[in-house]
Image (cartoon, rainbow, N blue to C red; front, side, top):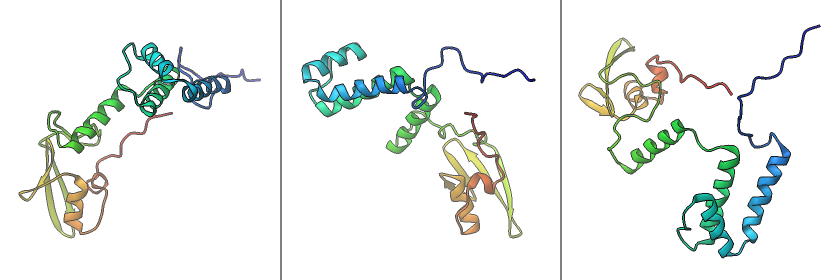
Length: 171
């Protein structure tokens, strides 16, 4: 008879939503209580959880942020890498160039790399720039835009140029 093996768990791992009904129930009770609290109690709860005075008198804002904070404390927040990627995407959307570079996609080759692809008997060379791609003197924001220019149809640019798919994290 084989000995039973227990699943490996991280020591001191935070619970995940749906894993423990008791934890989920306690959090739900706290979130529901926020809706019944008077503003003075909401502000006091804010000071307890954020160690700072409440920033405004908007009940909806305080409930939303307090609810988020309660869940972060129990289940954990976003990873450092996720926060960095979101910051890069926000900067990109707002047109800020303080943090140059394409947002943390592991498939992006190093700046200066030449990608070569033959299509319908024609060889196309693309140079990777710090903030996009260049082909034939034209600048493109994405490899997909380059692939569309070459083929006339929509393509996943990384797949078109034979770059590996992003490694998937194991859950």
